[in-house]
Length: 409
Figure 1 (cartoon, one colour):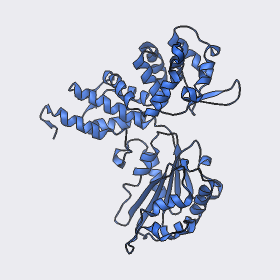
Figure 2 (cartoon, helix red, strand yellow):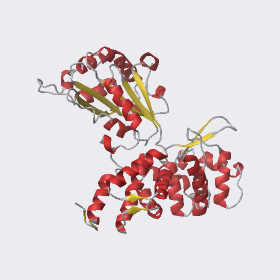
Figure 3 (tube, helix red, strand yellow):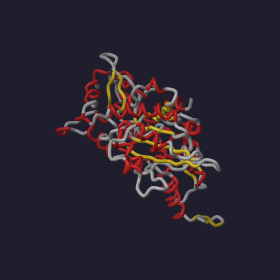
Figure 4 (cartoon, helix red, strand yellow):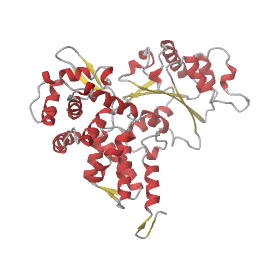
């Protein structure tokens, strides 16, 4: 017990905060996966139905791996035992090598060796079909192949399609779950039309404001703490729909509360935790930001201001924005009118490796659209710009209120 009467064991509470918010490792319990309830139910239905498989795809950092790792956790029953096998693909994988990884994790009761030892030659789709068919009728084999987008071998993708077709005839009910970073299924699966009835698309968008608030509120209640509505709004805004930021901000806000021996997280504590969240971000994000905004040859520039304006800009459902849309935020940041001609050079430069390739440009001349190459970059820019003074609090507040109104719809 960390509390006796009105006395709080603040050291024990600090440990509990660190165990409750997990920005690093994927979540591994269904009960902890606040938000995404509808997707979890859909995946569970797929695992129970016969001859159905799933492909989970979307932006990096939206929680695909966590979802794949937990959706089946409460499917065990008196008549069904889940047999889960999860492997990661890499850029050198072939059909043989990816299934050899799976077979290394299978050992039949009567065998002395793992399954891969019985296949000295290349593993083929029919071999996989026969081995997965050996699972008992009361077993539910679920094979998860994460990082599927890293496979560059086209033959592997074709053979995976052949396997999915073949598994429709399996006497039991094995389920294959593919997970990868992609905008659409065509980037991951070949000849998708021939297996559209068997392979269910599970696109994962960023979490909604309500889902982010659910993530935070669930964990704060678990800690027997409280969080104000304004503080929840701040976390939802800064998280930009990405679970990592929700967990990181939740963790550091709660730790700040523990430091001052408060059981309620308020807006000020969330804002004071930004510097800790910035330090928590993946090194590649921080490095790309530095390269994008660095002053070459000691000359002053406005790359940091342009990037901050991009982060505040209204975008479409695909996260894209036009150069013209940057004019308003940049003019506010600079304190004087700025038209596209004054910063189009900066936008184009930030699509190049020399400036960290933080932006990507699509479309044709005069209709170019820009978006952040990494989803985690946009919230990082806002937090870093506030911390460094590039973005003044009064400017941020004006755009914060505007964005929050649209975010709550």
